[in-house]
Image (cartoon, rainbow, N blue to C red; front, side, top):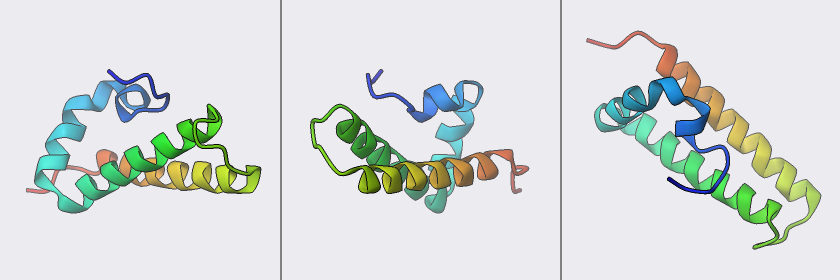
Length: 82
């Protein structure tokens, strides 16, 4: 497991299997998850000064991460389509 905080498995520990299943069945969801991981890692690199950035940019990255997390949570909460 990664040392990067805020990974989806940590954010949704009871839905790891559902995340995996939805990623394989829904291309939009898979894209959201990938984008979340990219933004989350960018936030982590900024926070740890691996890739320093100004506070405004770091704040925007955090807002983007939160919006993606909210969308992922919404999709996880939807009843399975069938």
